[in-house]
Image 1 (tube, rainbow, N blue to C red):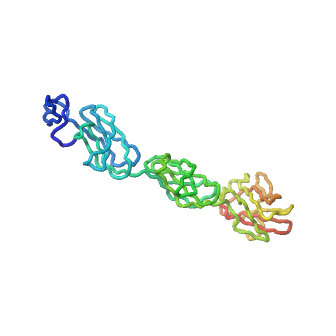
Image 2: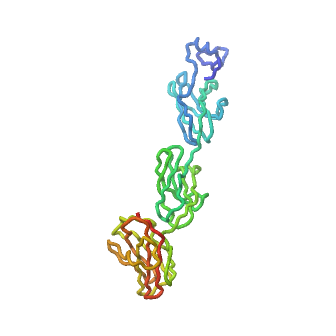
Image 3: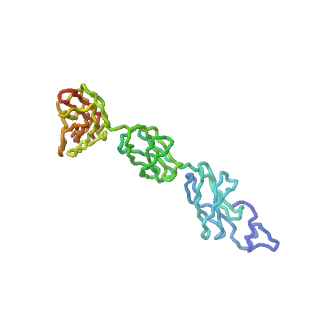
Length: 341
């Protein structure tokens, strides 16, 4: 309450002269409760754009209260919010539009002299950010992401875009715990340069964009040997990582188109080796998988297809294919290293 020795005149003690202000002694003489207002544990921090609750006390009971905020503790707010009053207590919700320092004001409605001002409240801007975003990913493969968010527990979604200025057209919801979030998003199906975007769900103005992420295609030819130059379009395995326990499933799918075409009767063999071979290996032949299937097949349109089990031990392995084109134009190629976990 302000320190004025005069207070607004209630009807109970008003004079016929129409006095509008009375000294405190007149209140006391009439046995009335002195007007008062105050905050109950006002906040010291808030997040811009996020509602927060304030509460306090008021006297006499049932007196209307309004609340607001100002950048000054001496200049009243320019706008007010009506509080809900119950007896000698009141509650309200306020939303500060932008970050900075503000002061909360509560005032008896219509009595500017009956007010209280809080200590300074630090208002932080709402935010979302990545924590160590990836710089590489593999097409059509789950990519782990994580970051921070304010205010606490705000929903977060993440998506891919080819642009650092144009938001994604689709999003994946993240798991949020307090001010942290995490999850995974499936990388685009086409190799190229992309950007990861994080956004507070429903708030297009609260976003973060990662540095460029190189999304690479599946394993490709690293080296090739022999009298034929192999062109693959597209090149698979579809993943760069497999589990050594995936036996009997033919989990490693190989499908590629070779150029030039091969004559009827041409054959192909595929091998797993722990080092990159420069000629056809003598061991490690991976013609079939234990659950059934066929040897690598060359089709008339020069497609090479195979379904292979991964090696039975973890490590870095090389998968190679070697073609016998009826004794001519023979050759082989080695895929980039494949991780077996």
